[in-house]
Image (cartoon, rainbow over all chains, first blue to last red; front, side, top):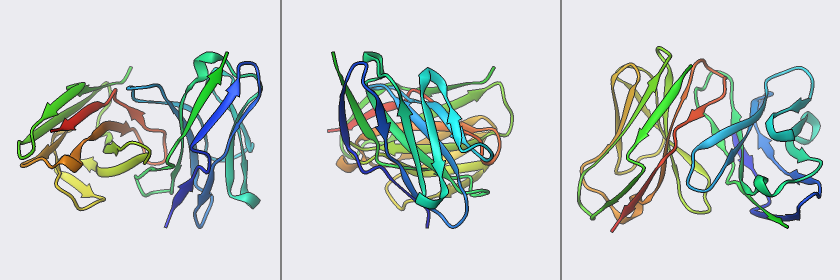
Length: 113
Length: 112
């Protein structure tokens, strides 16, 4: 069965520091991968997605993610974090043709001024 | 452009009362529709999804049901709420298989 693991429940970084949020998936083939961000009390907004091709994908708000098949990972990165990036981040997997999206449990990011 | 509307934004209901949450999508036809629940510290759990009118698939057996009476309308219901039904409910849609999901703003349900 498909699954997504986000091993870090909480992460705290200083403003201006770099950020990496981890995501590992379990799936028999190469899935479609997504990162979403959720501000408090709000819905989810797509940051970026990977379907195929270049394994380094660029997203909105200066985020990028790299798909590593050998590690079954799709980690999210940002070179310099802004205070407005404080939110909860979800990694998601979509197995082709299933119509269903499996989300990780999320990583809550706190940014220190 | 496509938009998704979900209401109400917040809801406080007593145990044993009925529930109806509504979600509508505009600007697209025959979307795939989803209901997720987000409980504190547990991420998003897929509850139901629908690929067409009257077609509902349930992911988790529970006290809830879903219906799709119209192409762009998705309703989440319960006949009798339980305390454990409290959570943040999110409606989402996708245009095609394997495309990103677009989410509504969510409904915060508190069962008291």
